[in-house]
Image 1: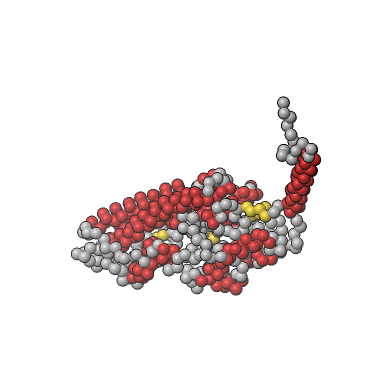
Image 2: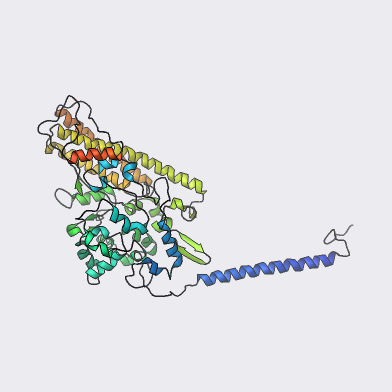
Length: 493
């Protein structure tokens, strides 16, 4: 029997020596690699140790740059919001003109400032600059409009209220927007969400604290994970200006559009309204980016996934784990946001998200068309001589319909925060607007108008604004069929 030879093909005489050398080399390389691994582990552990702050942060330090000495990674990420070139199919940081993109919105907001200027918001670092340049600000605008625009707001509220943030809100709201403009220097930043002494997340805006308390939720019962959404809910919500311009969230009956509508209807015998529509004469409510409310109806909220988990995901550098303060669409950072839970390729995730958003957008387009036609149908009924009693119900229906549409349209993310609920709400919009149009047709028939309404050309922002201007100047286009001219009792809303 042949015996095995070690380390072939070196030969029997040299086999033991070569085997010994190889073993020594192998052990040396292994020891070296283990040493590198151990050194790396020790380094990461050292990095992960909580370090002492380099310097204390003042109680009302509104300049986020002053926080950067202690938190350079977070501040560096925050500064990345100065980029304005990023785009997703339905979002991004560039200042998209939403009226040029969807001219129908000019008609839906006829009679209020959103029909003049409605742009997609840029990053948080532009909050002060953008509010100063919007055409929606007038000489009579209250200081309440500053509430979500600057880290100088909590300081001013505390100063005006003698140190108490909640009581300081009322004298703050009583000021004029332009009166406080010189003191609004710093955009949304660190102080809006963090306690400078402990760095714990905190609510710095009284309107949210008051809304939570009215619903029986005490601040001390809120978990850290819940707070990672609630700090966003200080601003990304529906709100209105109550008595003395006090910022108020209409959450007392719930966060869904029908519940908010019931709340608004209960504020006065005729119901709360933001403005009277220039075409239909309906008393309308403008929904203000109810992102938190829509999110609360979706699967991510059900699974306790916070706003920050997707829009400010955790990052790791060395042994340091921290929150990415470059607040942006998750589609611009899929690997750190979506892919943490959804184990598909980035392209599959993006295609899935955009497919959902496309379906919501399609439903939204249909809702907008039928809403615009409903407003014109009511105006046609006015031109045909319908009286206020006949118009009361159709105006109520178009108010209900548009409130629901705006609940979805004013939210960021094209419905993705809760796509099933968003489509359901848009279906309710189409149904209510359809009921309005049927009743308008009946009113017109009783006035002797049987032909089709002549809807004006609103295919561009400029054309739509010209139509609105004509209605506001009491020289509206004739909407009735050619053989039917406006009656002597017709009035422009």
